[in-house]
Image 1 (cartoon, rainbow, N blue to C red):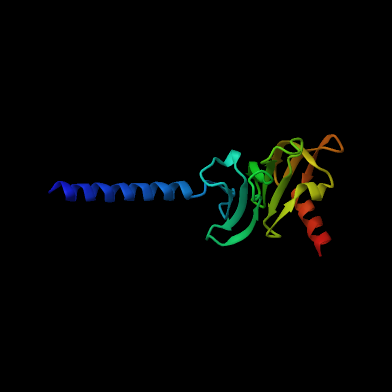
Image 2: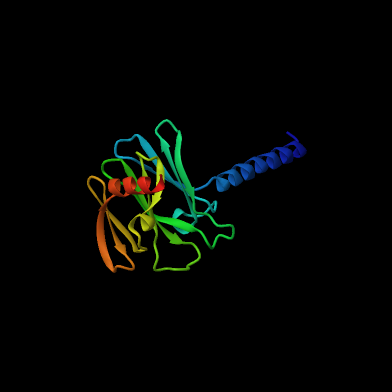
Length: 176
């Protein structure tokens, strides 16, 4: 093989490697959570491509095991500083609710860590802050069987444990 052909092959190989590398970097980082009954998959997708889930604004997607999109919510801002990142996510043991909490990407209101949950029965995402008529703080929640969540309320200055099925039902009744 002459040096000209070898140079062309090397250049072509370099283009292929660069192309594959840029494709890998542009793929969004995604963390998946399979429901305990394995019927649903919730994904936390980093919407600032190439960054870690924990430091990126996020999108939540809930799919059936066959891939059907059941619900989604995007917490991305145009400037990357006014959206939210998912910092913790977990299914309830009964597989009926996917709970997640958020942190501001811009550092505003660091005391406030809103939480939301996906309701399997209603096939929608519901805000815990709205359902509890208070702001959540502390950045943590605790799940207990079958469908309970414990959170810290900002204005009432206390921890509460609530049934997500009751909150989902009440949110659906108010929304009618």
